[in-house]
Image (cartoon, rainbow, N blue to C red; front, side, top):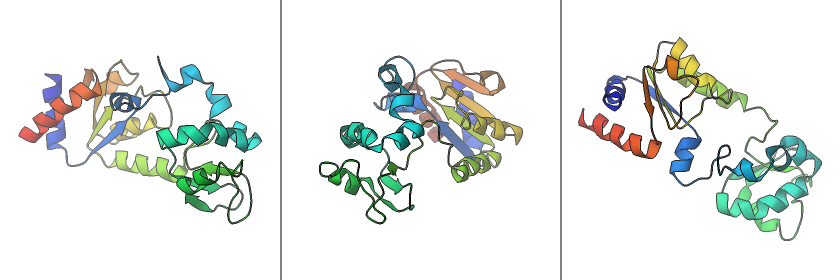
Length: 203
């Protein structure tokens, strides 16, 4: 019944937005960060992926990242924290066997950082504001595979709710926002979403 109700809400929505989290990644074979078997079960995030650690020793970051970057493919661009020059990560990766840490081709600085958010860094303000704006204009928000405990991402559904949107939560475990949702489906996104998509397509 709940999948049918979710399909009805999505079918009648003028503007729907989705917020996806690690549950979608896990179903796609991408390792998650938290939870059993998550990346941070093996590594201390403060030591591995914090801005303070990176700034203190960029070479250590790049030594760990050299092999991991080839597999994970995260952070396709790299920014120089000294001059702001942006270049493709692939070009920086090619230089890692010759220079460690890699140097900026413009200013010679060694603080080249992938354009991902590290622990201790704020989310990019423009991206957060854009998310809030999308949420404010939505009449339905679909939350899939998110624990809804990490802010500011967890604020996005609240912005949508305050603007009058209906919320659908699809997650393997209960979330703190289940009580606010119009539809809650506790299940794996890889099983629920195909059912939901099929029902929406029928309407």
